[in-house]
Image (cartoon, rainbow, N blue to C red; front, side, top):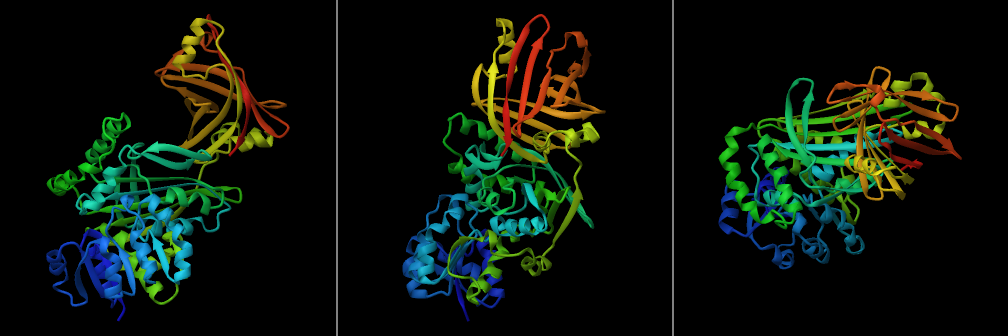
Length: 541
């Protein structure tokens, strides 16, 4: 009988892993600091053997116990080093864990040479992310020519037990910088910002609606862009069931951003009592969703995978990869080396575990609508120069980079208006534009050398509507011999139509020169004169 040593083996996730491994026929060494807790947990199953141990003493335990595999289910991995996998390599014992800490999982490859020399597999991240998420993304991406964006979310039941490691992981991310790939480049946001309301639905199952989720830092943000055709934007959100909990965490971002506190990890011991007090307010339903946006031939495709766990089975999901991976490792099917678990398993390998739980999952595919400019211009769109069509072929996320020359306002009043609109200062600037497509509209965030301003573009009949705060401008898009012209046909303030004679003038042009997209945008206001005039070029990135 193979023996498996499980660090944190009687904890929230560790206990589930230990039971699953024992049920699979392994002798499980349940490791933790408390002998009393270990004995109490192991009392009813002879395959579970208590072993009091501090992780700092792991090297000696590997020599004395000689397990066939080590599983680390302790955490939080955001604060851990590689002492345990290094000890396993030195003892020539394979290792895997349920880490979701980005740096820990993505950096595990530094042990690759040592693991290969020792002839053992060292695999990090056999959890919901990146193991399950990676399996789902590869399943959804199959057959697509290009992937534009990947959006993932997990919403936990309020009755799901959060241990100290989970609490520390959640609070440790609040307000901290999160690097992610979007707009065609590495960008930065903050943990637990960008709240969105999400629905999880599938045929034959009661939907979960209106759950809030916010940005969380996971290994997939670094791993997936380079693993998928087209280098897509990747976003991950997480949330609790109760909306006020998510709003509270969102609000706590600001003290961290303002430097009033360095971080919230030290307050994690408060989270567990608060959860116990509010547990009855929620349900026992958890959910996970992966949305993938891409191209197949000329079609724009969205594929969506949704999982709903009932009966309190949501916390089982992070544990399901370990028994499958353990069987592969002990059967010699995993080659030696250190790597993340994002490519370890396929979605079909999860099916037996899903079948034994109150878990349902579903994949659907829909054809997305044409791009905004194509819908407005109709047949004229196909006659535009190739660089213009490429620039406006926006689907969920995109980016462009180039250069711009900005000419300032013609007088003091114009400069005041320009500052109010956050227009860039005069001069030559590196330019980046981040395109976000949602619900048929587009948000363009223009970054002129660090000075940013955004506008929201949408459709009203056969006209383009550009929104700057309370102002809306209505344009007719006209194809010209050199490209595209935008002619203003109306404007409004807070929905109230204003006289066209008082509208700003913007004879904006887009054209192609030497195969490159060019723009020229002057903005002139009656009685004031020029507010800003910028021109330059862009290329998709």
